[in-house]
Image (cartoon, rainbow, N blue to C red):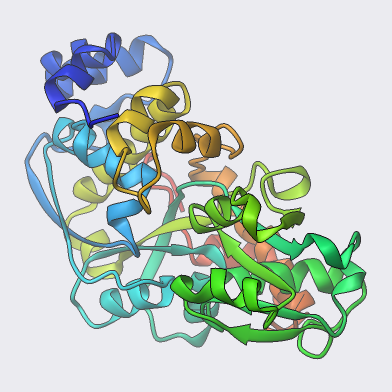
Length: 349
């Protein structure tokens, strides 16, 4: 199905189309009537340009919704993508080098870099739940995580959050993630070939690549474990980090970005068909039906801030201790508070 013109998409979105006409301060009134934050407390009503580094932003569902459906514009933001690369570490590197003032990366990647002390930034919001999937060859009849001992698991990059996430899963099962499985670095475009040739036994990947491979019947893959069910279903995967200079000089712009992304995340959760139409042909050639099926098997709308974000960060910090990456003596709650900031409340730490 061909991509609908943006005007037709917006026209079919009911209340969202009406909001586009009322502008920022009309939208503020709707938030207030709904019992949400009074945005006038944190915004300055001025337009702002933001240089944002977001890995693979062109295929990010949340970024596309925020940009193409006018959520950035509603908060008077001119958001420009700078760099971004393909991994969270690339995005953090952009912020560290001054190429961007804001970056998006997995929480696990942020924790690694922040702990090194070289990145001057605070985490201000979570962006979406993880979509990590461990896919195994059906014919191997692997049914437990413990079965991965000695198995070859393909990852796209040794520093990707995919490996860290499944390392935590393995550690919780009493396995050493560094010596149990055999990690093999395989480029995204070669994953399919690695499975077909038998070079690897499993893939540790995330959507949309994971969903596309899982649903290719010719590959014979099954899902052994994922992050979209159970313990991690309601936990954020990505986090928005803001550089200290921006927090000092443009806190209202940073707050506006948080609000815009919150609104976009909540909107797409209840507008899956419209979102799929918006993104058709942009994500690995996936059609609208494929995109809808994928989103309906993901946890959408996760966007914690403030104390909710700190709780989740502390959980991740505990898991970094489990992997031996953080010392056991580190206070998880205190460290979570030290590396985060609540931009939506004046007394936020």
